[in-house]
Amino acid sequence: MKDRILPLEGVRNFRDFGGYASRHGGHVKQGRLFRSGHYAEATHGDLQQIRQKRIAVQADLRRPDERERQPGKWSAPMTITHDGGREHEAPHHQFLTKVEADAEKAEAWMTDYYRVAPFKAHHRELFATWFGHLAELKDDEAGLVNCAAGKDRTGILCALTHHVLGVAQDDIHADYILTNEAVDVDGRLGEIATMFNAHIGKNYEPEVFRPFIGVRLPYLETAMGTIIGEVGSIDAYLTETLGVTEAQQDTIREKLLEG
Image 1 (tube, rainbow, N blue to C red):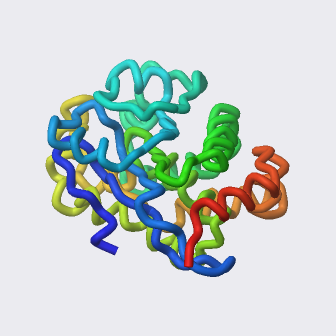
Image 2 (image 1 turned 135 degrees about the vertical axis):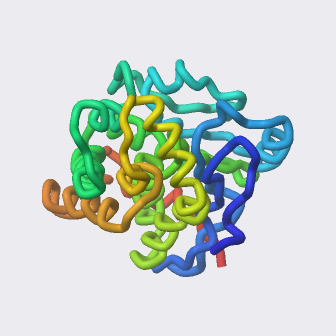
């Protein structure tokens, strides 16, 4: 799993999410699907490596205010964005400022976010557009999903992409959890807590911030469970909620599976 992570200097959580076996036969091609955080702090060396990946389509899931605050130093030729969900400050910052939080409340807040994220109108629109572009990828092109940290919004869309490609649930979960290693949650927790506390004027213990900087499997299970509860299945969500046709899904599999 570790060899999926590309250790860049200013871009966090950049990794290949191909290579997994598919129930349709063979496995997902490597070098065709990537995921990451934002590109506002990308170094010259980072940009050189990223450009070698032939990324033609980028789904940037960040809100408009996030893109304005941290404009990327790189973007793909086709970059998909949305105009919804504008906030004056990151929602989890607002939560930590207004509430006397603890680790349990922070985890509950994140779980609630995953419950609603798949059905936000701007996410539905961008997810659908992503799959449309995947179906049109050329043989020498790759796709990238990113958000601010490359873990929550990105994690949901990558899990849906894996589902289309027939990746087993255990592998979907393993790829999702790999964020914790890629961003070195344990190693960076103290540093991030200090930064957050200074920004919001609080003095929270570092563990309060852990739910926000890493991922936990129940988060993704909440998102997928909510989808199933609302529309019956992941397949129904893809075809009925997002409008991704069976023909598009077949084409995506033809392009991105091998062996």
